[in-house]
Each structure stands twice: as structure tokens, then as C-alpha cells.
Image (cartoon, rainbow, N blue to C red; front, side):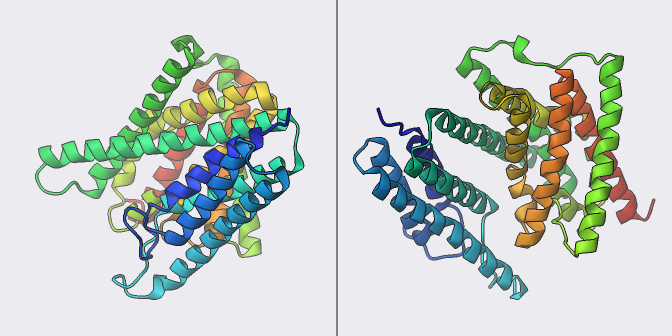
Length: 369
């Protein structure tokens, strides 16, 4: 029987690109569709993959149509992004609006669609189809976490707006964002446990022993060493990186908000992100990719999930270089989890790294006051 698992994965990925057409793109839309061109390309890819999945299209023609449409999606994202960046020098009222969520979903759906179409056209074996399914599942869980964080953030911000006088300031918004991260990742974890019938025993949070503490120290040093090395290499090559949305908010004249994020790094940000991307995503990939393969794939997902945080106001080369840095930093976190089997270790490494970065940003922006 012909394996059509790659086409099944393609349906999911094309659906992501199709959903991206509902986000703002600075174009004239039709009804709920904000981007007609992207909607047409996404529909073509989705239809071709769906027909291939049902064996209603031949492998050659179906995968060709799906691949060309997916490649068109990638090309359109590049053109649309370049056009938006070119328009950033225009007045704010005239600058095109482009949603980082739309760019992320379209890019992931397009690139993944090209790979899925290639796999379907080549008739790759079932093992590779299963691997593609696992990657698609990991991306889905990773971005579900982002959506859950966004929903919690909107809910908490609405509550704060009703309780506090006036509009919530930058500090309140960033504090709410940190709390929303913890609630959002926790919500996805609970849904995952219910869906897979897992218990709290699946969580790998434990009090670290001396060996774990040693790995924590080594991990923190490795992250900062890698950060310095990459910064030096990028400086020599003349490559810039993008600023995180937190850094953009703090540079707007309120660096004190960074002080709120220092304890949040240890209490919410580090544990929350490591719970989602290491304990759930990375751990679930071991059976298909092996342990180190799981670290690699989870790091790709972790990097892609940071696109919305860096996309606003960033140029494409800066965004890509930033994601490369995040990918390598994630490898350190994933390796520390694999080697210790204790989620407290990468959570502590992650939290310490972020806390020191926020403290350094504060001292730089406040002049050491």
C-alpha cells in the first residue's frame, strides 16, 4: 500500500499557511481573509495535499502542485516582508501593517510544505513520514503554547485594566506577560497530560543534587561563552541581530521594567519554557529521532517559536541571525536536560541566563543607577 503520510503532514502545514491569510498583511482583503494571494496559494497547497492524502491525485502531479504552491508561499512571505521593511521609512500612518504571527505561520507552513511535497513525491519510507509527523506535532504544540500565552495575556490585561486606574503601563504589561507565560505553558501541559493520559510523574522537576548543580554551572557558563563567541563572529561579519520585544519596550524610556523580569526569569520564564519545549516536546521526540536527534529537533522548534518576539521592527537578516543564536543556545539547554534527566537544571540555566541579561540591560539603559 502506498505511503501517504507525508501528504497528511502537508495538509496540516498548508493549513497553517492558509490560517496566516487571516492575519494583517497590509493588503486589501475579502471578508475574514486579509491576504487574498496567500489564501489562494494556501488553498492550492491544502487542496493538493488533501487530494493526495485521499489518493485522488497521482503522486507526481499532486506533489508537484503542492510543492509549487508551498514554494510560492515562501516566496510571497519574502516579498511581503521585504516590502514592509522598505516601507518602514515612510510615515507611521502610511507604513504597511504586517503581523509577526502571520509571517511565522506562513513561513513555517510554506517551508514545511515544500519538504512534505518533496517527501511525498519521492515516496519516502514510512519512517521518514513518521518523523515528519513528529516535527509537525512539535511545531503545533510549540505554537499552541504561544497562543495560550497570548490568550492568558489578553485575559489578565483585561482584568488589570478593570482593576487599576488608567491604562496599564509598560511595567504592568511586561509583568502580566511573564505571568501569562507561566499560565500558558502550564495550560498546554495540562491539556497534553489529559490528551495522552500521562500523570504528574511525567514531570521531571526534582531537587538538584551536586551533579545537577555542576551541570547547571557548566550550562550557564556555556550559554554566556556561546553568546560572546557568536557576538564576536557576527561583529566580524558585520551581521546584526534583532531586539527582543522586552528590550524594545524598555528602551522606550522605562528600563525599570527590567527589574520585574529578573525574579520572573527564575520563577516563570525559565521553568515555563523548559516545561513546554524540553519536558513535553523534546522528551516526546526521543522515540522517533533518538535522544540527540530529539534535542536537535526541539531546538529548531524553540528557535522558530521566538519569531513573534523578535519580528517587530527587525529586518530579515537580523531576525534570521537571532534565530540561529537561539537555536545554538537551545542546544545547550536540551543537552543539559538529556544528560541529567532533571528539568530543574535547564530551567535554572535558562532563568539565570535571562536574569543576567535583563540586569545587564537595565544597567546599560539606566547608566548604572
